[in-house]
Length: 319
Image (cartoon, rainbow, N blue to C red):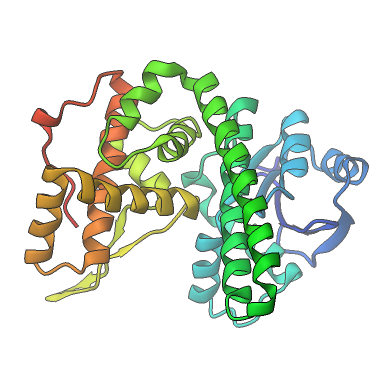
């Protein structure tokens, strides 16, 4: 009997309570998202490669149990899976279909994907704090907007918003403390010396930098989802769009840093003016500047050097 040369492929769609598991394209089966059930599944396929979409924190138990048993796990972004489904003409999406899509995607793309590696606990904690802060801000704005037109609830609204303010203040303190424990005072001071970068932006950049191995700045930019996709054909030059892979919160914070830099720094303000004169929209110009800030941050973290405004240049930062 010939030995199997390709691994067993498991596509796993994850939710809070269960996993839909597709084995090599077969009909998906559902199991509970619990350690015992996951271990039972994984021991039946000791050499499997597992494709799973990152869904909040619900995939973490499966990933941890798989790695403990020596299996390879590949995290597939929802962005990539959505466009893969569109390319296949997949009109419907539900758990079982997504499990089958994950298995199909992994079986065809496994050679160009890198197996998942868990983040160190301190990086994981900082990432969770940043995500929770973003959720806090979203909920605060929803509350503010929903109660703004109800005059008789103004006192209630103000009390709730004051509670949000205190909670965010405490969360920001925890984020600063966690970032300081990871990188130390000097590394954080280097980051916040970049115009527009404050403690929160610095924490996000630090978390992203420690989330994987990046051989160069371009790889770091791609991880942040700030790399540009092109679609040219013949003489036609298609519209440039960001890949938007990775954490949306990193891009939001870098966009905020770009806006702040253009308000407080003459070189960045001049760069914004230059980009606008070239025909870019204000949003597109801020994206270019956000990308430049990320490149600067990568260099400072990688080389452990201080930011020097006199050596600021815009090489490689164009749209």
